[in-house]
Length: 295
Image (cartoon, rainbow, N blue to C red; front, side):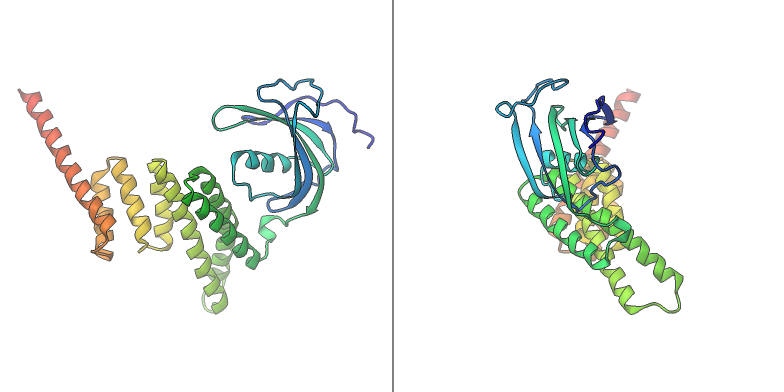
């Protein structure tokens, strides 16, 4: 390749991610989400400075990427690779520096040899394929969540949601354009997609609740309840998050809705007693403060 020997500088692609091209590829031919690629990655020794380093096989670890599927990475390292591969052209060789969640910097050289199967852009996905892939991502997310890998599971639910939301919007617009002549198959598909979207938001809420990101939980549960107002899991999670935020009156209001729907729900019943006790304690603390102020 004529320009393969050109020298390139490090460029910052985003915060915590730098790239230096070693060999240019076929410009503009980049893999997309759910594409499969062939290539390899060479990891630099931990903490090394690879500014002008020579790659020595005995000092670095090589990992072959055979039919590497973009979008199915179940750990941080694989997700970093997925991101970097999508920022490369077919045939390109580049070095990267990436910062992990815990602040550690990783250095590696990535070879994108071939795009084996190129996925279409998301708006062009077949409806059946959107549903199939979304369900695959959901099942993997559930498996990771059960294994206490909360962050990794969160990414899978989020990827599924990114596929589903455009389809949900398209179906909503289709039905709105023909309010008098609604196709029954489209209505059923829209209902199925709405239910699937709600379940993804619910699973995301479960992940956020597990790490006490209560404000995010409230937002995500609102998205669920907008689609399925009687979802008891979303009601419980929203109430739990409001309790964590010490918004006791709002929590109590949500709890009442849940118990109206299912008076025997033990988890919501327990939460009702907790919020009632918290309100009493809050009133007691307030009364003591008032008493001290006037004394």
